[in-house]
Image (cartoon, rainbow, N blue to C red):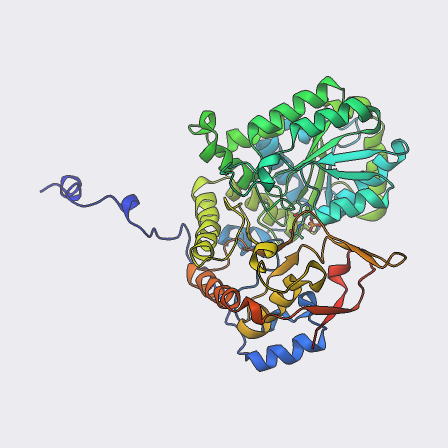
Length: 496
Ligand code: F0G
């Protein structure tokens, strides 16, 4: 009997509950053996600040960030060896230029030797933000930069240049009962009102895709289009914070009906057709360990309004990072990025990546842990207000910090508080804390690094802490409560 006819008697591979991963392990690294007692001692020594805890002692999952922790593919490791470390116009520079043009659109890397470049490479995202906002800050006083949700370094770079950042989260974001797939959207009504009163104070608007501060939620193409049209009617450019652009495109394909038949690369092109520029940390959807960039669309609204800024940016880049043909990157970094960008828009990769995050979230939700739903692309967010509801924990007790310390010491998994402590602030004069709109602990999943078993182990540990949440004590901040970006620096102690 013919094999294909024979196979028709059996269920199709895609109908099975568990599908094999879209990749294999190319090389592995064994972890150090480390007991809860050893982890406890060291965590106490670093004042319960998980940023200072040695990563070698993380025996479970390191979910501190999805940034720069991607396991690279064998193509990338091979390309790394072809890195050209020349001081000017290294071989990878030309490959990267072609790849950026192919991925995002030709106008984001204009090839014209007589003009200043419009593509600027930096060593990571925040260096690109620094260069950009320090120039935007010179455009006037009392400026505002609205966003659907600024990331913390973006916000810090904006305020450092005396500009006011504003977050216009959409309504569905705060509505637990909403099943919207695009809770990362910008609130169009609030944007409209802001434009009516303050358009002259807004040099540009940022859309973060996906919205990391807003729970890693995606932004719909409809929202991107509507924001762009509204802004352009006021002659205001739109910029994208594009760190997780490919993951955002995957959500658009899955959940926006008119894009279901479209391939990811075409969706990416359409997203960027609405932007007048973008900043990017390649440590996320560049699938590399280091890299960032600022790209200003040639002939776009921003370029037309501020043509001279390109030359100023180039001078700044040369002064701070390096010549535009390498920016802040080594030739080998550039080579790995070329291949990372080729891989990241592959559907099989994105499906495997995002399904892994979603399965992890579902395991937690099934165990009763209050997590933000639907799940975003790169992380699962635990809502700490709901986690501690019904216990004695108050906002100023920083239960999220207590939780991350216990998870790390007791079970070896590292998570990050992004809530009342990280985004709150303390005013030394009034001696009052101000708390943010959201109070999360984030479990960020590194790309291509862990297997389902690892994440299930983390979910089980979190479940145990949740079941025993009334035994989790508050922490006192023993250092750094009044500092800016305080979560990176502060030290804590469990209250007796
Ligand atoms: N924008 C967003 C949305 C980010 O998530 C990050 C970094 C940056 C900008 C800055 O990029 O790290 O290359 O300087 N996010 C990491 C995180 C650190 O853990 O979410 P960078």
